Image (cartoon, rainbow, N blue to C red; front, side, top):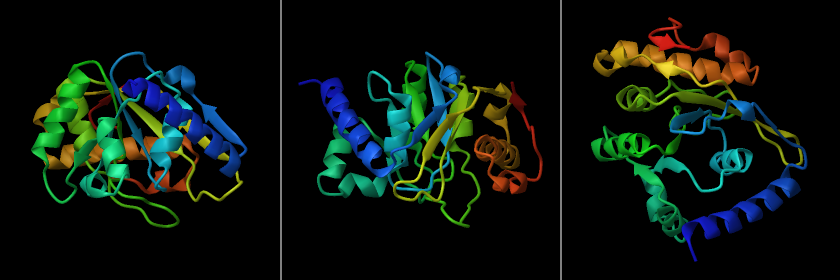
Length: 214
């Protein structure tokens, strides 16, 4: 049995579970999904966000996903994630190996899912965006596709995934300083929350539109 076969089996199971837990599931902006390489940048508020994203994307094969290193050691789940080529990253420091693997994945024409917040942000919890996705996009020349996934999820309540329009990152960011990278990461996070009409978008970052190209 191939990885693609098991992915489709898992996809069907996830879709059934989604129908049971959230009978109303809406996907908007699918016309914005590119055919080639890209970095999907999504907000992160629940453990199953990656699953709901994959159901919304409905791709023929599993795209590459970044996950925290701790999940690699989780019984059964860690083994399954390794089989599905999940890229594990050490959130406690600069994981050069994982970063290089992500850039190589993009240069090979694959797609990648990143959660710029790096942790679950539900309720009133918010954190500053991480800059990894911006650096990967600049290094590989890959567009970023912002994605908003419903926050503060409740069982049996509607769940929505919104794909925004892809945009490119200026190549100047390949040699940008930390402050410029942070501003660009904040702008990406603002666009994500703006997709969902979340008022938090108005409070992200001090400078907007830094080194971004439509």
